[in-house]
Image (tube, rainbow over the protein chains, first blue to last red):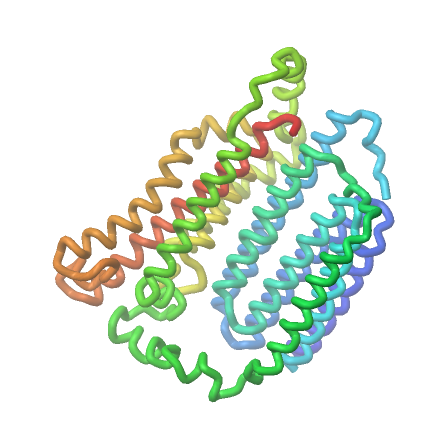
Length: 93
Length: 332
């Protein structure tokens, strides 16, 4: 059962990775990274149970907390950039 | 099945690595770097190395992304195109790669019971940790006590790296006073962080204490569960960086001022060294914790706790100083 869940989550990780690689806009990639982070948390949880060591859930919690910091850093980055270069706010590439 | 998982994740890792090299938009490279770090951490976890995975989570996925973005805010988004073909560089890289691949043929098979790691000092650590220290996490025992010299060296490397970055970035350029004056209103505006955005601010304010508490848990529970000073320092730094992102850098500097960061940086390394010296004064050897208390086992536990605290202090101080050094510059 756990194996099925891991494989399914791996599949979604692959799909998120495709979106991160192809883009096309920067925001697609940001969302893809965010989703990849969520999937990583899920995979860690499932593997922790697969190995029979649920005390490793600590790690998943660390990921969930730290991911949020990264996403906020991206938001601040976009905001700073928009203020500095008012013309260059549109997403390129 | 684990092998299949590992192969799948390593394939993804390879794809992401190639994509990072190929990306000429630096922001895209930073985002892909985040994915690389998440993948790497999953692989560490799959290989049953939760301590390393936790470090990768805190440093790779969290702090690195923030620092990369802070650096990226100071420079252009696109990489400069190199039209010159660097044949020499290609030759060097190809030769090194071939040598490394050649060296892997001598590598032991994965899971080979006669590998040096299984027949050298490893089993001795596993057998004797319980007797000497009575703590369940052997990784912490090795890191803190058996290989305490190595960890001391690592800590001083982190400390030195922090000093180096501050030397490069910490000074403000004195020229262009007029330009600086025109930048001041803009600077104060940008240093407000996400103050005007309600939802991130509310959610973030809820999360800051949880992250700090979790960092303290990782710090002081490192003898029983994955974690320790390095991870805790990075998590606590991430918590304060989150505060800086929400309330602005100046507000964060009011909470944890510059002198406190310097004190944390130097104090942590000093604490680690002092634990060793105190051990010498009490009649033991440098970094021999057994003499710190009446009972050698209690002494070992006390020593590990103290040096982990030193590691955590220095790591969080260095990471926060680097973050502030980047954030304080408005334009490179």
